[in-house]
Image (cartoon, rainbow, N blue to C red):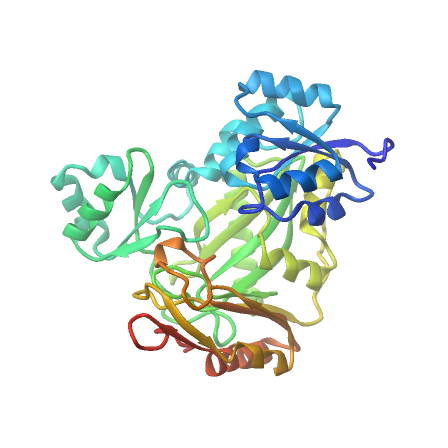
Length: 428
């Protein structure tokens, strides 16, 4: 039963495939707000999720509504704030919030946070270091592709302008392959950019990839840093295999990525809202990979809650209902939380067997063992990071201890794929 004393909060919800379960979100809202489940597309939510939503509060179906109609229905619901944790709906949510004078990203800011081409342009205009980049639509002419080779060389990265989880992100190494990748995309959908070079000296702790994410929260123009998350080495082409919180960086590198992330937030015009900023180390300094208008999802939320005692979803809700949130100094974790994911080989088409996963429960520091793909499942690297075979979640006293768990994960768990061999990704 909704508490009439709490402010009403429109939660723009898309369904179980892309969002946390409603029960978990309702728990985050406890003592903060009464949720109005606001559905841009009720048909995409699914019957199981819809049953849960109706048990947990009011459901507002905005399917087929114009932005003006949607805003009016939200107004009538009594909601005084709005949150959205799905990139696909961020711009629409921003349009509704603008009409209702709610604290949220402005529509032009939401566009920069969800369209990687618009984002690159805004960062470059603000004087930030970016890789060379092109709208794929401008590269239909062979002479234009020749310019890409001349300016950037190969490989270059082809990625959707809108998307997440490394889905359909690939590196291409020739003019012909670039032309083919562009031809596969639809008009207005793809970005081409130079590969951001690896640093000559790997940063941070052993077993870490040369990129991190910085979690920020902006409140009335004041940007606070919640922490920096490290990453395990990528599986080809750009699939993530793990996160560590906090990142194992020396102080000068930590301060450098934090400062760059805050500058990026301001360059994009963010005044209020959560941000997840991914950056890669290079010999010339950190380069922004992308900025997302949501807190780090999934494992990062779990790792931050464990390490900081902060629920970043609840933090965003508190911000939306009018609380001014500023952290002069965020809490410091006492250990290193980790999530390690095993991705299938890039050439695999079907999983034949996954062996040894149950034994990971015996490894010190492992708190949860998460099965993913199973024998018989079809796979494709284009699905991105979320199509993992198995994962383990837990904590270690330090980064060296976390790396020992990662090495044990790849020693114990054996994945056989349809090529007759074992999974091609091994911990370095």
